Length: 361
Image 1 (cartoon, rainbow, N blue to C red):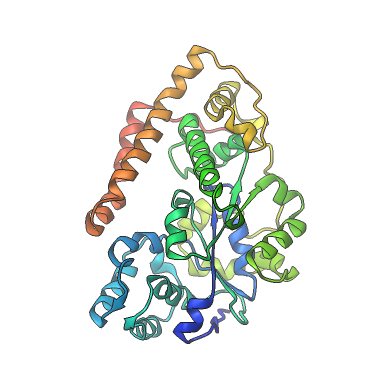
Image 2 (tube, rainbow, N blue to C red):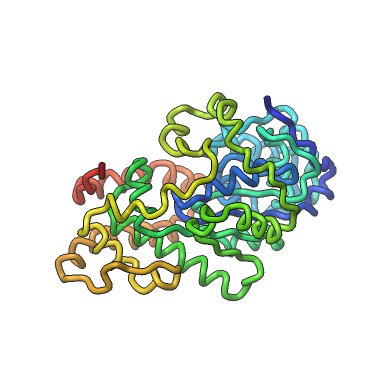
């Protein structure tokens, strides 16, 4: 059964509800924590969709909204990846967006969208909006500009287990140096952004969370500003309802283990399933950052041959982030077209010149 969220209806009340973001690399436990917060009666946390930043370049500077601009925003929403699977009442959303006509911050318009998401869990008073998105990890400063009150939960996982998990679900190119460089880039970027605003950031390791989920989630609730509710750990019991709502291929590929109780069974699998060569490359790319994140390298020194094998993935990742920086400055429509097609074309090109690792058994 679906439960409609009954949050505050007035725009002024919505603007007072704070936002928090769950960030980190894919396959690091971000969806697990999202699911726990989604099950909380005082949190509104929809399915992942990068609409806030995607639409910011076109609508973020609007201070006084016209009906035409609001309808443009409404139609652009449904062009966003994954938004079409959100359970919402379209006509209700349209009317509430049109009610924003006049002087309304972009942040409040976004909150109207999130407020219309229909959760699988019963909701009471909504005290905080939440969002989980891996891509937001490198845009926390921009999100702070949109939502000055925003808080960030950054979850990090052992880079070798992270690679093993990504490799097994075919989430992105399964090249160890590429995946680990992205892991390092995310960690360094979030760490840098947190230096001048440490009170807005909470760092947590996946391994620590699954080892003692109750104690760890209590701390996360305190950080976000809500009471701990033990019933959230029954989140997996709505699994069948969720599977009916969302695309089967997405659920099977990315969230097959989501509807099970929290477990530490996937910790340390890299030691059994990754070859020594993979681990050597991973340790080399992670470098001293591994220790900064709380992980010990098995191989501290790398041979010239290992360094050479790691180079293509490192270069590809650096090029990808440089292009992201450039494309980010393009007009909205150009940026949308490039981001919809560009990453896939680049990945296919790189895959041709740099064969993927063999899938572990």
